[in-house]
Length: 497
Image (cartoon, rainbow, N blue to C red; front, side):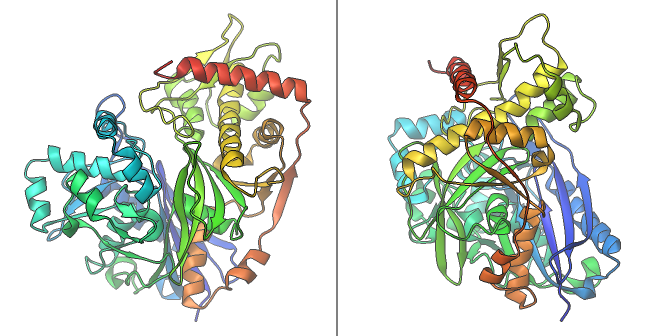
């Protein structure tokens, strides 16, 4: 059997498809951006049909780039933007409206109402999550309440709910497979991560009919077979994981205490806690890292909504840079006497604050502040937010994270300046791997190992290689002053002082 494995990485702003060869090297790739839709302030949507088209076209690009056909592919793995909600007609496969994206804030008041009913403790106990618009459940409830006839149709079993992985698998298999994996299910506010099952009590509260929910499988499992008419051959879908969990796997963070952070549109740090379901006392999330062979591994997660998106804002919103690549050089040239802080709460603040009503703010501007200072502030904001997450994890994790080495991935880690500043502000080493496509690699490994053409967990871990380690070099006085300034900026940004 061929060792080629195809990974679909369906992200927030673009879709990528990557072909890996039998040695787990990138053989071909394709990428396509798609439209971000903002119907109102704080609302973010995607067109599911455009996402589907982007998947088909990028897979075709990747196969051509690799010089192979679908017949040469042993298995397909899928990783996806988590928490984004799609509802479609079971009979036709047509979405009933645009997908509501994980960044969307429209259900903030609904979450507040549930909190006033003292229900957050129940949701947290069962799901490990907090009541925030970020998660899928309240988005789905909103859709059922606001799309005409949706709730009645859902109760009759006429509608299907899914995160992006489920929608893509449905389309890829011609409607034969209605499934998801445990990691994506764990982000919905409807899945009991202790029992590994949809929770009837939570479904009742959110008024979601169980008939519209997919079957939940392990991350490496039989998710169905791609209809041969789509790419020219049947391909087994054997691996699925949400993007952050896929990156954790791709970084080979299989041992308790290992920590990774992904820097894409947002930033997400996951600390492997093994079979222990650690309950955070510092407003981190308890989540499923992966489920393999029926055994669940848990993680503590810190979620930052805006990371690379802040750089996109400098480019597309303000027009102060021409490309994201310019920011590192600009940050190096920034005036060291100016301390400009950007708190990128464009869609609220995630962990550990969870303030859905906070909005972005800039502090410390002077008449001399310009693109260089704004670029530095945008890059440093990612580092400061990561420090907040690491501080919370150190308080929650019984074994401590004092000697933690942070494994990083995502588009932003190509910037040496940003990674050095990250190490300086964390006061911890930062390891950048040789293979930066860790999210796609994680999905590919799930599928390839399941197909028997790629190595098992232990041998896969041994293949992980470091490109560069960034050691902290900032003096303690400078670090402490900068962290104090950041905390003051965040305090002034929070919606409730």
